[in-house]
Image (cartoon, rainbow, N blue to C red):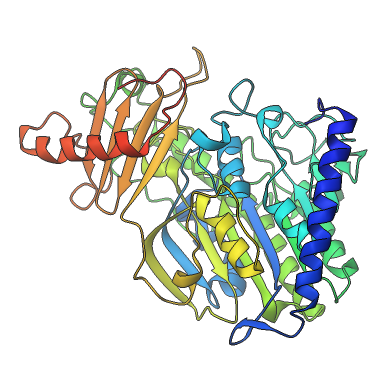
Length: 470
């Protein structure tokens, strides 16, 4: 962090330099080698992470579907292990859960930029292996010192403070602050697209690149570029029966305390979100086109995903954080031409799987990763898919801001089980009840299932979130 001593940072940089030289020596001896038919030892890697994008908004992004989805793999059951910005981004960069990274929230002491240990991440692993690395966009909430560039990043174009930004923002551009205004050309999604194009153009063809591209969209409060201000969504909002749910008597107290509201409010929130995705769609296409123009596309791993979902009134909720599908489920597409063939899969995958996937493709270690590589799934091998996934949350917001109590949850292929620090529990059969309307935790016929999932969750949720107890 920016609070570390200069001596400690020099010592760390020296260790990384030695590690990088050793890695380059090994890789030099492997020039021309292939990891599998059609795969080179060091493919280019592009990771695009949106902010708060719902999983059911991909129809608004035809460019993404054409350039990434159709030649790649679409993951229909992709999730995050903590549905909040900083915890999710920590898991993406390390492959580890919140109980390992220590990042549970967006702010100290249990989250945010200052709490994140940046000494071992995708950036350092790949930089040590000879990659030219660039972060363009959002890093972590609380990033405020423009002169501080975290380890492993060769190019650094990061939003200051980490809040959702469309106009009137400051970025650290390779360690120097640069301010952007409210002119059309300052629209942040477009600015990031231009930065990505320049990084791709300026990276030598003899060097592999890693680009982490993280726009603010579609996080609220959403602002549109002039070209989209009169646009209409490409698809129609279809509210499910859990929108402004009329009967929440079986839900936890924090849900029961919410007003029901109106469906029109949900439509407005959904519309604003999907319209900001038009510029993100342009960003994706521009990035892919830049890779193609430089002759890199055929050998590039492209991952598109969100850091978490968000509700627009389901169960009366209008944010993220909850264990419900709207918060934990995310869109995810991966293209890697040597092995993907335009398919989809219903296997349960998660943000903790991104780091080990990238590491395997790049031929580097992923120290501390708790996820699983998705390379086999990309090849079509479903023999080693997970059947359940741990979800964690630490309550950090105080009234009047609604926040679920701390919880540990288990999302399986069929069910969701949640145990809150308050002692409240939820159990849903997602096949019979995909909208999570009927909490079965109090149903005598479901007690055997409840007991089994409770035991499994206790085994997986270790260590527990701060202050949590069973």
